[in-house]
Image 1 (tube, one colour):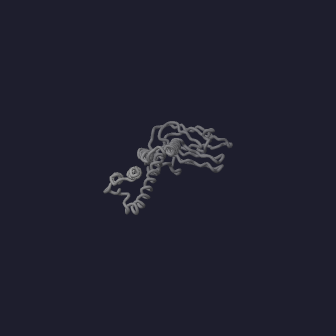
Image 2: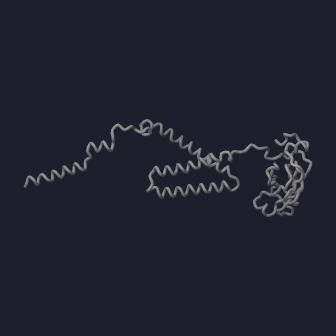
Image 3: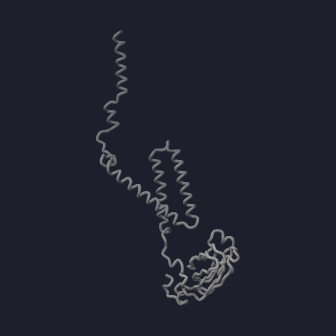
Length: 265
């Protein structure tokens, strides 16, 4: 009985030793021999190539991202870029918040996939609106004030300090017309709403002075003029030019008034 009692603990220790210590077969299953080392984990690559390539890739990615964001903004007009920028900013903040909250439950691959999808959507949007964001080649943006004309439109800005033009209704013929504005009170502008008029904005900044420019009216219709200072047009500082006559091209209008065909630039 004494021998039997002595042998039992030894057998249990051997069994426990067999349970706790991995066998050679288990070690081979966990770390199989002969597996190729991944390219990015090789000593020379990890020490020299990765520190060189990674910053370049990051810079290229940032530049591409910024260019595509810019294209989205440039493709819009008026308040559209502000709205698009607000939506993108909100998406970034909401997405970052959701990823931060869900990160303990998400795998790293899922987080990477969501981030890549967001960046890809920005890139795709930028390439889709590339044509719209590029400036179009057009004619002259404005006509020089030195061009010859056969008609003059006279107006007064802010008579008596009021936010108005006097008169607020003018008449003209199609073609070139000189617009002459007397400045009764400074701090205003004279603009034509239709860009087809090729009229350069007049800055009315000196009381008692006269400012003039040349406008092109290609066809009959109503052309609105206004002060571009915020709130002034809404307060009534605007008017209408009623134009009559046949439709003309800019070259025809220049020739009819004795200007060289290339005088518009």
